Image 1 (tube, one colour):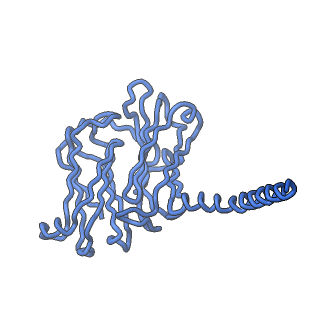
Image 2 (tube, one colour):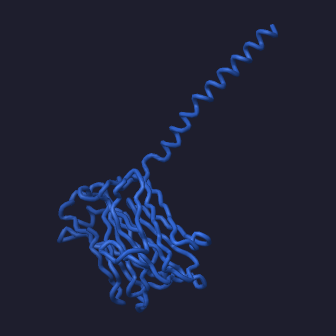
Image 3 (cartoon, helix red, strand yellow):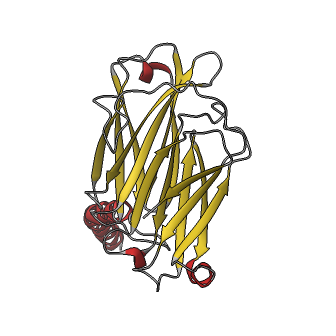
Length: 262
């Protein structure tokens, strides 16, 4: 009887070990499943020309979503730092594709006041909709889709600006919902609009979406010379892009600042 009990215990131990061994590949598959369906925006930020910076506020928008991260301490003491943002490839508005657009901005903040000293921004395409997308910030020359090095803003304050986003839809009259994301001075606002309702109110197949920024951003007042962005997202905007982004520099102190986002 004792021998029989030992045999049973041995058999149970043997099968437990076998089950554990075979579970390792399954665990790996589970981890892969969690990571599947995502992509990353990896911002490589050149710090060589920055001084007296206590923090970097880094913001990015992709696929209709937004993220903000701060860089402090030892990460600011080297010649460069990398900030990575992970986004879902698919959400209830849009699925990321290789032609879709995103933007990333880094704001260098004064070590004592926490106010913006300078900024650098890049607008780009999501070339790897299920992988890594790398952009360089704070280096190179200013071109159409990049400010190049960090830019200083010294213009007059703009009080309570409204970003007025125009979305031409003459080629997409069937679109139902569109998510619109705007950003200025490191602050985001977003709205999901009923495009059909707004199209019925439009005589020229262009919908207008206003965003009032009536609170001062945490990194300082909005000024002439600040860059602002707008992105529009919807699967029905494909082709050419499910998400398209545009940007402009503020050039006056008036209330309305217009941007066409398609």
